[in-house]
Length: 283
Image 1 (cartoon, rainbow, N blue to C red):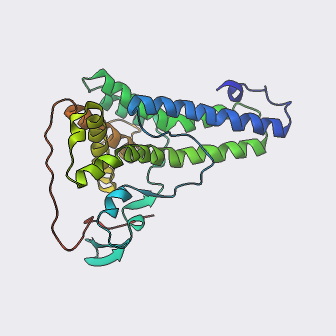
Image 2 (cartoon, helix red, strand yellow):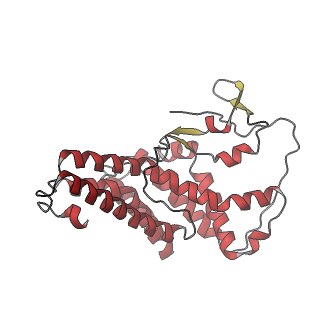
Image 3 (cartoon, helix red, strand yellow):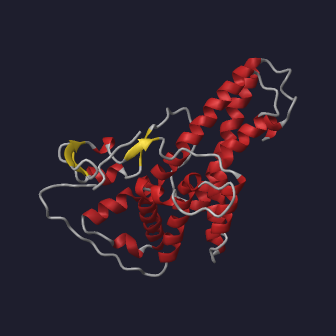
């Protein structure tokens, strides 16, 4: 933590100097861990840099670029099963929740459950990837605990808390956005019937991880993982569901990678466009 972790070292600093130090050091700490995660999990993903960007409150669990393919003049029809209702809407308004990827602080029981689950993998790369992912989700909470031992002024602590909350709410969203952006050209190629990318080992790996992540990150999948039996005291499946979907995605992607798994393309010739059977947006 450097200066931020040194209790008593900042007491004599003026407010402006404390703010400048914090403004430089906290983002550097978060960005350093984020970059480590980026290169270990997905070397060519977009940056997860902490920035002054506003919160992306409306976070999609189905990629808008998917949904846009069904839109005509920016809108499409959805069918909400619960209400038995057909309605017209826009891609930005469905398959999303407020702060869907917001990180949650894990208990010792949660971490033990995840470690028990992760340690079952036979591939050491797989175990390392998933342990690193757990670490990044807990980074802001660890930083917040360390800051309690400092003598920062209240105004500076307020600035720090704002940055930590930004990271908790947005790093997960930005990670998914990076994966999606790297595979947008692949999806566009598939829509035109071109699957040559699949012969490139790196691009194939990109695609398999992207595809697995899209499948396991949905609200319905998270709901299922939130209801699994818990055998570890202090473990709440609702807290670990966001991490389990990542573990399942890496398991699936690594399991298919390098095996020459065939892919098949299907074309829809229907006149009506229904991108999702759920067709819901929750906040």
